[in-house]
Image 1 (cartoon, protein in one colour):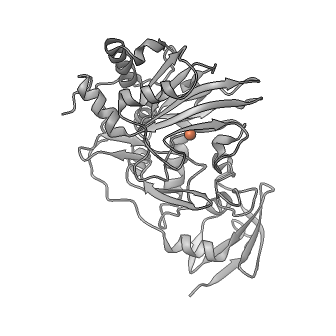
Image 2 (cartoon, protein in one colour):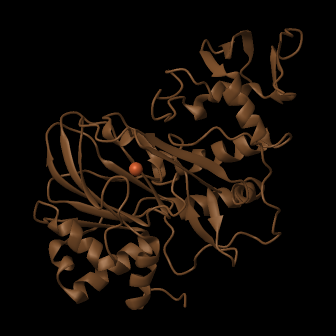
Image 3 (cartoon, protein in one colour):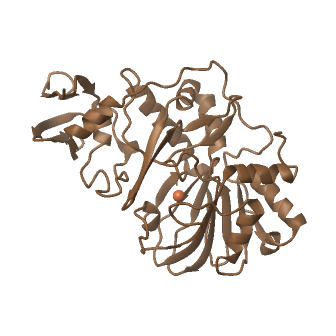
Length: 374
Ligand SMILES: [Fe+2]
């Protein structure tokens, strides 16, 4: 049975919303509007700036009209929510996995960078020369990214690079795809021209892409630098300053979705996924694609604070490695380690893109003798 109760109590901390017998925290509701200002009406990609919400935000007015809950907020915003949708979120409340009691471990055979290293670029000959390729692969292994300049235009170099690692991974975007700004081939923020917050791809995939390859084909206008952050270094630094929050993010699964006509993907895993030995294996973080998950009572603030706290660490501009683009430049990075974003741009851009699997990347490291893991 669904019971909706909207109580106004200005004597303490504003109004309180109760759905199906569960009190819904105000700061969570403020983040999960279903109106067009809060999320894209079709893809359901989030538009609310989660990280700008005042944790003490209050409800100043609310009313229920049929299935719709309307809320006015102390920060001036107004949001709408469906009672049915909120009821499903309440039904799906969950606890984190039990704590292992083991300290979080990090790989010890790579260079974690909290400040951007020099944006070294390799020559296109690495694609065709085995010895040069091993040097380039060693750079990818150590830092999580590899830039190659002066490659010929067209998709052939992208396919050669994917073949050096493994093979192109087919996805909803194709195996090797073209991404033209403004073309909106997919309902995804990647096709817009505004700045993209750093994120990982494929949080809606059980097996997120292991690498992402971009190769610029043409451009006009300015801006649009790629931004890379070492997610593993951010985890190390976050865990040093806030070990309990980092531990919570290794155990609390966050759900994500991708929706467009004919496609509805959902997956979930902890933002910091550990391997069976307790070593950090994968960072997953994309607030655009995140679904509305509500932790169990008593953990709402802890989970939101941990999620926001990790984001505050990795989004520090001082960590960001920026790559300006020019036709003929290619960039490949480890999507399980590095977060990527983009500065805003003007004009038009055309890229070739491709994913590869992470086990192929790991295999390439082993074959080249770069990884100590058996
Ligand atoms: Fe992306």
